[in-house]
Length: 116
Image 1 (tube, helix red, strand yellow):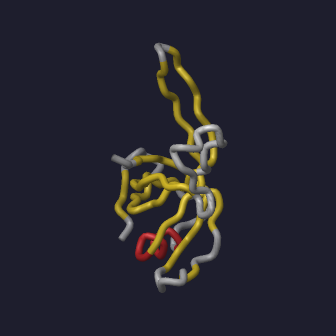
Image 2 (tube, rainbow, N blue to C red; image 1 turned 45 degrees about the horizontal axis):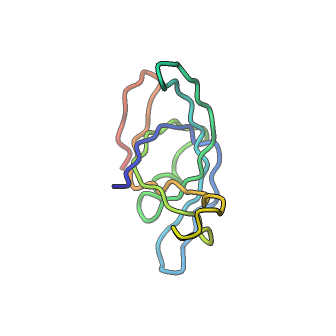
């Protein structure tokens, strides 16, 4: 299984483009901040994540205001050209992209609004 649910702020996005297969494509950076508990200890997380969306999801993301807070669903996949095999475990792990398959806009009152 490869499913991700992730909240973040849309801090950067490249222009909407059309990929070679004719689908809308948008690359972006989401900034995530949260607190988690690991081994009984509280830990604060704050980091950027590269994302990519295709089709109508890309078009919806392109319409958002800068720094919009969103909750996304998707999956992780190696960045283009970063494939590796299980036989080569000595290599550095491949960089991953968050492929965004759907999202909702989070408002300031911690409620969500579906953006279609």
